[in-house]
Structures are given as C-alpha cells and as structure tokens.
Image 1 (spheres, helix red, strand yellow):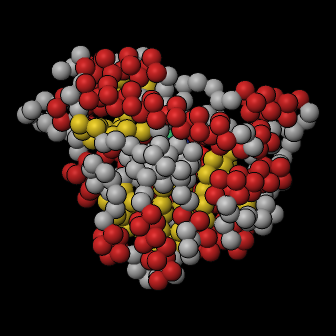
Image 2 (image 1 turned 180 degrees about the vertical axis):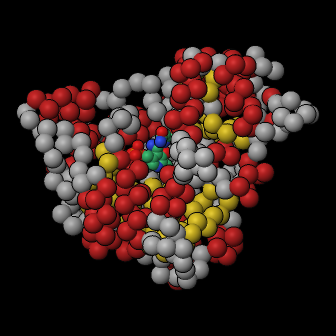
Length: 389
Ligand code: PMP
Ligand code: GLN
C-alpha cells in the first residue's frame, strides 16, 4: 500500500468521491445512497444517545443487536444462530473481513481464493495478512465463475475461499450450483468460506440464498453482513460476522485488537432496523430494482452495452461505444472515467480498479455505475451520457 516514493495509495472510492466534489459532477462512483434510511432506525440512534449509550459497547457487540441478527437469520434464512457464541458485531463489513482474514491466514504459504473483479479491501487484507491471493475471473456479461477454473485454483494451500454474493462491482448473484461447488471444494481442501453478503436484501430476481444455508455450508463458513446498505446508513459502520463458535471466536480475537468496539449508539438502532417488518426489506429490493432499470435504460439509450445486474447497488456497462476509436486512449475505461467529469459531469469507476494486472485487458472497457441514487439523479446522469453520442 506504500508506494516506492513513500506516499500511500488511497482507495479508488476516496479518489472518485474527491473528483466528484472537485468537479461538481454527479457521483455514480462511490456506492452510498443519497437519501436517508428509515426514520425508525435514525430515531433509535438519537434515542440511544439520549439515554446514555455513549461509552464502550461490549467486545462482541451489544447483546440486543446480536439477538436481532439471530432473529433476522431465523426469519429470512431459517438458521438457528446463538447470539452469545456465534455472532460478533464489527465496525462495518470492512472490519469483519479484515478480522476474518487476519484470523484465518498467515504468511505466503496460505492462499486466499477471490473472485475478480473484487471489492478493493479483499486484496488489501490478504496483503496485510502476508498471504497469497489467487483469483478466479468473472467474465462479462453474466459474471458467473467457470467451475473448472475455480476447481483448478483451489488446492490444499487454500485456507479461505472469499465469496461476495450479491456481488460488487458486477451485480452478479451466484447460482446455487456455484455455491454448492464452493462448499464441495472447501470440504475437499479443508478451507474456510468467508462470505460477504452486505447486499443480502438487494437481490432482485429471487430471495437471497446464503451459502451457510446450503448442505455442508454452515460448519465451515463465516458469514459477513452490515447495516450500511440495508438501512442506508453507510457512515455508521455497523457490521457483523456469524458462523460456528470456533471460527467466530478466532475473528473476535483479532477484532478486539483492531477497534475493540465501536458504535455503541448505532448498534441498538441497527437492531431496530433488523426487526422491521418484511415489507421494509421487500421495499428496498423493489426500489433498487427500479433504479437499476432506470439506470440501465439510460445507459442503453446512451449507446452502451449493459450487463443486467441481479443484485447490489451497481451496474456494469461497456463504454467502448463512447470512447475514441483510435489513438493512445482507445479502449481504456480508466481514461474514459478520468475524462468523464469534464465531458459529461459524471463520476464512475473503471472496473479495472477491482482486478489484478494479468486480468486487466478483459475488463478494459467496463465501467461501474452506482444505481443507489435518487431517480431524478439517475435520469439526469443518463441524459448527460446520451449527449456524448
Ligand atoms: N463489502 C462489499 C462488497 C461492499 O460493497 C462494501 C461497501 N460498503 C463493504 C464490504 C463494506 O461495508 P461496510 O461499509 O459495512 O464496512
Ligand atoms: N462499498 C462502496 C463501493 O463499492 C464504497 C466503500 C468505500 O468507500 N470504501 O462503492
């Protein structure tokens, strides 16, 4: 992360949001909503502060939230999870991922298998643990892994298979046969599955299927989620890990020396959110599906090929049609995104920001657009893109 000149590489999200702020462009780069979440949840945080929930929370998290996570897992997924031994609250999914990886892998002989493109912290955490990153590409336009390629990468050095479903940045939702193959490989090679399901309630075509609910899944899976996406509170950074007690304890052991605890007033508020009626959860999926459709139609009207996401905040488009046909800048989405604020007043992220160098050519013309913005913002962005043709 430290560059040879001593400067620190910043995350692509910080860079893109700064670019949007500097240029006044519409920010379809960083994935955060531009509207607040449910009033019950916001009110609960105010209330918690008012009644004095302002000192350290317990190390594993506020009991009320751990209980609410367990109830949520039972209600939506039929899982029975012990709030005392099988759930730990974290500082967002980001800390959960770091704690899980630092707990499970140690040194270059330990391999972590990751699907790429991947959420940026995955490779960084593997590097922090000093482990070896092995990747399996997800290819345009459906972004499902090739199971033979997956089986060829997982081996006896694989300690962790890291899954993200629904998937950022592609919007893919892994099919059941993919999840089953991951479980089979994890058993065969004695690996642990770490699954990042922060978009669990933003699955558009069918209810989300956690890998921990499939046969053989639970006993070797650490499942990670967060309140940020579901309750539009990305700044609160309340996440959690669930799984077998032994694995969760390992992650807690690391977590206590990362932040110890955080968010004592936000934790009970997220518990209120997790207990909202089913209609709330269906409503956010409906809302995001509609936004996906509006953004997708706008991108298509601007002449772009669009992969139809089945979940998450994001849509990937092939911007080749809007790029110069020749010259040095031909077929390079990074240059396209760098120029886009000036050309069209929009910020978006090249998918190459989420891949390893050997796989860059495959993603060279792909751009991730965030759909988690107000409808009028998406429409305005689409009309600006159309004006580029
Ligand atoms: N995983 C994925 C796939 C994400 O998109 C994000 C972005 N929010 C995170 C983890 C981080 O979640 P949190 O903000 O809860 O740390
Ligand atoms: N998850 C969000 C995204 O993918 C942003 C996360 C971040 O800023 N680190 O855009």
